[in-house]
Length: 93
Length: 251
Image (cartoon, rainbow over all chains, first blue to last red; front, side, top):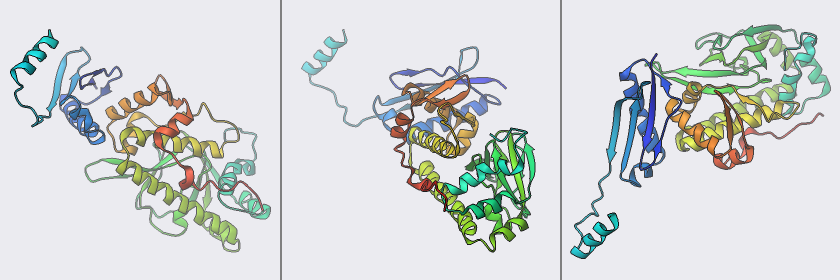
């Protein structure tokens, strides 16, 4: 059976070095969805902290076969004042 | 543990009697009566069935060495491991009181069983209320462990869930062992842990990595052992009250 690797990216990267043997791509996709549900059921902040959670599934050759990308959108966002925007642009420089 | 060929048959039951004494008082006479019951030795390989759902049990097997598990399977093939049995545990006291097996019982590792005839056990118990009580207490403690597992799977997160199970297994094995079992190797694969804890194998792997980083467990290739039991206990928020490890004495 082919081996698939499930990497969790939520601002930091958790690289799966062990991998898991699964029947085929479809089984790996299902596993990724179950895994994602398990992670979020355990700890919703995994998504909320960075408003983003991604699970990258790679095959043995290291190539991406599948990814789950989740985004949480906060309604608090609004355009800043001209001065705030300038400050943000400056800190990003 | 039960592998010494020079051990007499009675000596082999020592671990079973120790298990009963860990929760119940039995006189020397009661203990001798158990030790002199006739039984046959049976060895099984991992995953071999000891009892199948729907069976009418005629024997009462006791685990002398190795580990076994109870499992139930849903219609779509999902397997849930519902109990783990360790050396010294009786595997089917329930069938002394109810007829039909309601779950499957399988060897987890290579096991050695002492197989008693149910009718011999019934004859033993009838005039000996302390042994009858010890059997009921044993069944009640398994019920208590089941309740803790329900809490574990229903309400603890993956980290607490795995830590709690490993903690329980460590304390149960330590209780029955005659020596320190610090290097005790957990007998479950990641797939089996997943089927026991209701998580995916991938999630189990991630959770083991976190426990490893905390120093709570150690992993050598695919084998999992205890790192620091106090750390494991803290992560699991473990209290052993539900194991009812109350006695270690004779009357």
